[in-house]
Image: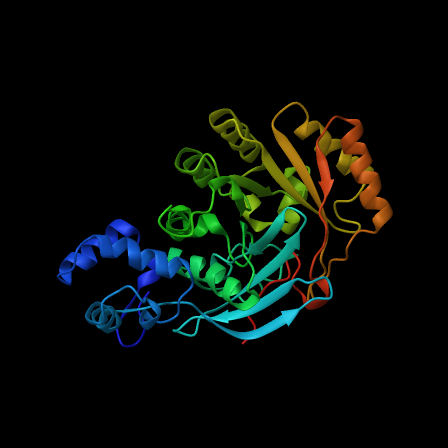
Length: 343
């Protein structure tokens, strides 16, 4: 991604690519690791790279910009969750959410500005798709949030705005950037990617990133009900999705998490729970029940606590691993399914 003055975002560059840049500028290749390390610290100016010669800092500034976005709005929940509306240099906006857990701090980042998947209970798709983000722009959300909160972030979930597998190039770049040991050095098992079920990319992801956690937004126990809330189901059928997920577990040896937003009067019945149990029983799967986070402008209502508890009990009685997601940030529209760009 380039800004109007035609500079390139240096956050998109891996160390070996920065070595090429250093050579082109007449510098030794070891400068690349220094530059990459400074970027991972979240610096916003080349002048902050204190062990880089002034001549190189000037040369970098003439060709590149550091694409850390501006937080044009920051909101903090009563539970400590922080949501930021970030704006990149070209005006593109996304929302990201910082969350505190017992196991450490986590961030939910966006892979696209908007979304074109059309899920009827989600806020992110209401304004359509603006554009996909680069790997560096995805990393920049982590760096910007760490700068804002002053806290380390040890877990990343790519579950914000957008469908990550609809931006596979950007997603792949992000994973390689944040995992690189010369930079942020985040473990692959501390990254979770959520998809609404783009089957070809599930198979590709299993080969490319078998150690990264995969979550599949399922939200229904069968094809008919899934089509009602998720248009993607018309292209990628339920049985085919289940087959692809089983293949994923066989290839990687990793468990898949199935996300299930529990919606009042839609998918919260005992019959739905029993049918889902039959689908999940006997393989490496885990169901994460999410009491629907209501979105203004959407017709759906969250299921009450009793029906969620009953749904969970049926799954457990059938031997299915299940948890109910703890809702964070709902008072600032920062919970799952509530993120959107708001200009």
